Length: 123
Length: 111
Image 1: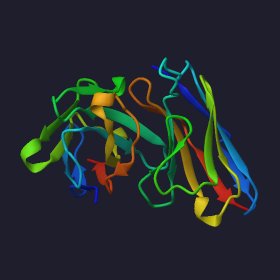
Image 2 (image 1 turned 135 degrees about the vertical axis):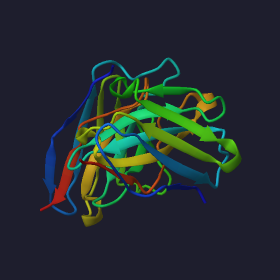
Image 3 (image 1 turned 90 degrees about the horizontal axis):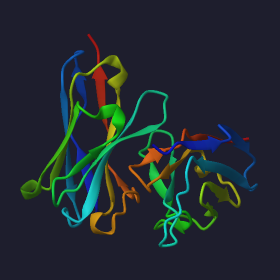
């Protein structure tokens, strides 16, 4: 069965970076877009960016350009999200999501979600 | 960027009664292939979101048939024909024509 298992909670100081992993299993790793979505306390869902795991190509929301990196390691079917220059506004739950088939340009179809990783930014 | 707007912000529904959520986009989500690039999601309390509807009107696997999506272009609707207690949560629309953007969400609660 399809699974996305994320790394554990993180506590970071302002100005630091955080890197979250997402281990994928149960499907063809290189066929589907991966996305990262976050949810601040009491707030809605915010799309951050996507990764094409076949080519490594990424695309990010304007809000995150310049401080967001998404990478993958095909040998371990793991994707990573790194966010730098953290502020208290980055305190949120971060979700790894499998999107649609990249070769059909299906950017949506968020059918499978990781369990979420709590990131707390505090001095 | 495409801007997504949802209404109402919240909805209180009697079990067994219908419910309807509206979603509007700032530009058309209809592509020349005939697909509307809009999804609907439900986030139940304490859970990760789940896909309900994709490409405007297609129910995801395992989604009860009381959920339906309709609309085209810039105006879309999610309908629940008979609300059940398990349907409480936050509902989001999301456009996928360009890089995804979520609507602000609609909270559904039971009366």
